[in-house]
Length: 285
Image (cartoon, rainbow, N blue to C red; front, top):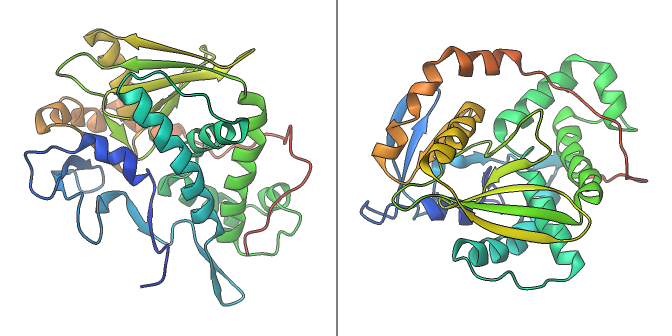
């Protein structure tokens, strides 16, 4: 099999925090939205957490060669994020890191907002239908849409990181015997709140925003806060939802039949915003 063919839309190291040790092959409890099916997905073997895998999601073919630059780019950022997440999950003091490494951490977090297979598919559909969108995402609009979509991810992340560093980080810890859920799009925003939220582990939800200097706070939360945020995570899911137990999973799967979730899907539109910080772009060949 070609290298970098099986791409996880949520990093594998993150999904491992939801493993139920009582299941065979270190599995997680997952609900697939399309099939409306709950089951245990193995975290070991050739295709760990297969529900989160799409073949060549971040790879396109350029001049007859598989261009794997984006998958390598993500992998480099994930290594820095994994180190931070390990410290935070165990409530350890965050070790000081070089500005370059911290930028990679923030880029990995921003990337979670645009790397899902659902988002990529929607953006590609928009590019294929509207030539105007092609012209605003690239200086060479004749190239294949799948290439433009992947390059646009790099541009999105790279443009935003400059305005989010330095960063204030609130790490919210789930109550004892409860956990956060995670989905294919593990982030959400409130229109009237400056913070952006992203799930990092079964015990850690991050709220972050630009700040004058790097600051972080660990905060334990109560069940009512957890329920409110888990609902938002679930409403943002489009392909799958994962929880630490089947009982925890069953608390939220009913939301996929709600008018609130259906309206969220119907009202979504591909939008764009002007570049603020980039002075050049990238090509993935």
